[in-house]
Length: 357
Image (tube, rainbow, N blue to C red; front, side, top):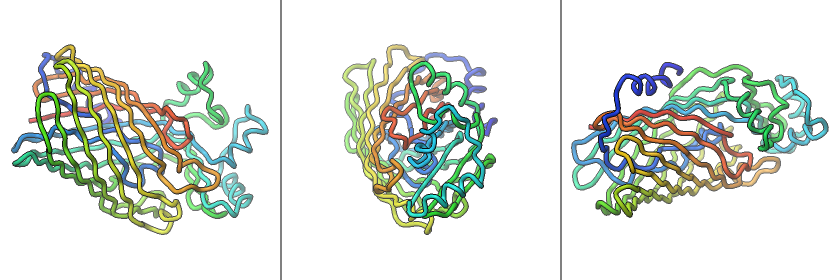
């Protein structure tokens, strides 16, 4: 995973930036990387400008996301002594399970997820476009805890951030008094369910474009020792408005339908989801394009006592595109949650390389 994550940086250092215009790049393909949100299809922004017939694009993206989230019953234990450092073990998690046999879900996630995604796009006649994205997922203790704790000490307090061992894996999922998954070791990278898509341009012009996109995620892989989602599908409208040549804005709205999966997956009580995005990209120079993007998601699950996965979330991407050469773009961005509803990854860093021909 480290080699894959470093590839965009190597290409960045090796190729000079000649300041070529790469056209309309579209919104960045962001998604929340909270572990339970990675198990099913979720809303992700889709470019409204389809590729010309016969054109293609390959995109490699690597996202490193830090997450420390846990259910309310664990927060209540921390309230007694907020300065303690907990020793999280399998026996500790089993004790939590025994003490709360009636709660449908209790979770603890302290980890960094690494998701590397290859996306391929191909232009079709009459404004159509077919695409596929294949994610590879793994997790580890990571390296971001010290930085995040320092940030929280200067004014952005997060309950429990100083109570857990730094840069270590602690994952526990409890269902109705039974510890169904526990891990204190890194998980090696493995392929996740691919997403197949078709986008049809509805209107295309220099100042405005509009497209509709269909997505399908087949059920092919298992996670967390047997959790398997269903055949999920999505529908999205995506638009671009360019009021002047130096500014692109992108907007989108869509819905995701989630089918039933394995019994452990169904016990999490996932539901259909709505999502939306809004992006501003500045094009004042031909080589560098800074951007800011917001991603809104409704709750991932039905309301469940003791956790907040049913609440909506809002996260932002702040970064830039760098035009390396004609058809080659490097992107670097910082992702953070805005709502702090304890149902998202805390922060993430993403690097991306796009090759269009």
